[in-house]
Amino acid sequence: MDVDGSCHCGQITFRAKVDPKLALICHCNDCQITAGAAFTFSIPAAEGTFEIINGSPSKYIKTTADSGRHRAHGFCSNCATRIYSASVNTDPIQYILRAGSLNQRSQIKPNRQIWCNAALDWALVDGVKHITKQT
Ligand SMILES: [Zn+2]
Ligand SMILES: [Zn+2]
Image (tube, rainbow, N blue to C red; front, side, top):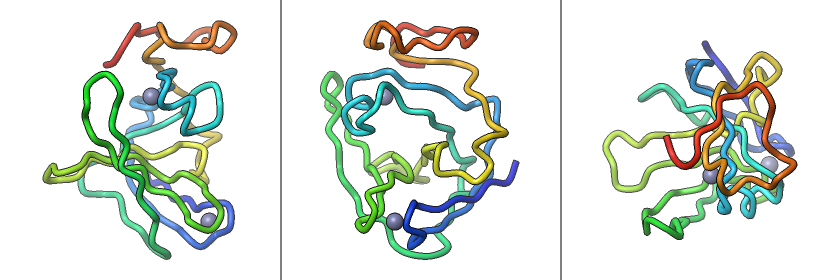
């Protein structure tokens, strides 16, 4: 499906194509901290479809604690809304969109939750498949 979205202040707008079946919740520690929340709700952009329409996200390069992998987090430097996380040094770059910034967020439901071993004990979502660690 076609999706579009923006950061809270509106400086950054973007669009992409997604498969709604791939939406997920991530309970890992990094997601809890960087989101300032119990988990993140995300959906991968289909390869080559993520496009920034307006603005230019700032980037934070995160080093994953257990694997040492790098991920780029794109966010608005004005309002701090997170737009995506992305692979680093891959061709093509794989973007995972933060589903909450999509205008179509009410039409998307997660169908798996990962890193459940790190979940806050009240935060596991009933009725969504549990996966202990990564996919
Ligand atoms: Zn903004
Ligand atoms: Zn995570």
